Image (cartoon, rainbow, N blue to C red; front, side):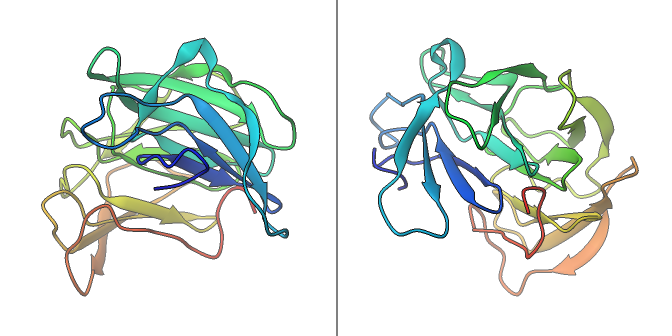
Length: 214
């Protein structure tokens, strides 16, 4: 659970100064979720503060999120009112307050995906319902996602991803396997084998010392 609302399936992204938390569901059996966005100042202790709302009353969880140094994106997710996955992308400016705005659409709808970025490009792969599609967007430019390539190993959904300035790595997945695969962010193409996790897992935390918001 995360944020002041005590919800799960929250999207999170950050710059070097602010962390943002968006959306989420009030427990897996509740049938309800929130469109609230909250933030905290990383260098200060204290509770989160209201940032705004996801636009158009979007009540979604299990979305993907990425950030550049100035802009955060929220991608896809599971829509509680319609009980289905969506393909929309929203964005916000991290240092301001306010609601999200429309960015564009993913090439295919999905939730529980692996999303990560450098400061320029965001990549999404691994999703529910399962599919091996990889797509990307340029964070500074609004528009629809573009096909990047395919996952060489289909890790289904609930895998996690992280980046440094040049490389994106996707790990694990809903089959609790131990596969890691990567792509070079500035290119397009299929994933390549990176290595193996010590233990196969899903829904894990995945971080690195360099992402798009730093």
